[in-house]
Length: 290
Image (cartoon, rainbow, N blue to C red; front, top):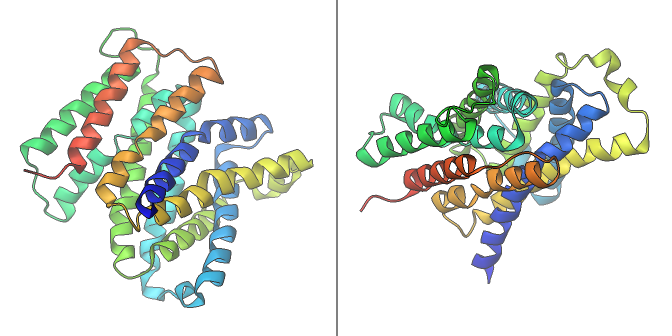
């Protein structure tokens, strides 16, 4: 039963991440810029997670000053940059295209791991790269000759994938020293601090004009950051990280369904085929060698 609940936790986390477009579009409608959305998302998530750490074990709050570069990596270089690229890709393309391009991250993790940690590139990993490239070509319409996504939209989508991948690289150093909740909480704290100067702080609060706006600010931090990260971390107690990564690939499926049923985006056979190829690549990367 505990194992089933762990699987369910991971699936719920991925589904919540997949609904991010709803929150981003709503806050954009209120006049918030992408960087302001990132700030509120990070700040609310940091407050919630630090509250969890205080209740769980206050010793988990302690970090060493010399380890701050790790959290600069996860919070600033990864989270802030990938979120900005992801939100921009949503506006320049669509929710489904942005989500699939974001899931090129496992390929970038693999390539960076080969470069930094000297992990070998075998036939299985190379095949995964080919599948990812083919899947992205189908999703964006390049392969079918009906591309409706601008080159800038594709570039920001791939930038989101690189930024997302960097979280795994920096986080690898972090989890060797600290609890995963500690790493995540400080990631959001550093992201909030870094994004504040870029968020036009003089008019940031002026846009908080009603209880409805406050609700969406809290919602974007809780439902797209704090809660899914807590669920995903809880799921990892009974599920291997490789299987968890494969389960999390329902995120772009949910994002695509939100785009189709909420915003009326088109989902043709080419996009479906591309999504399947990207999923296959992620599963292939995570699968154990015979």
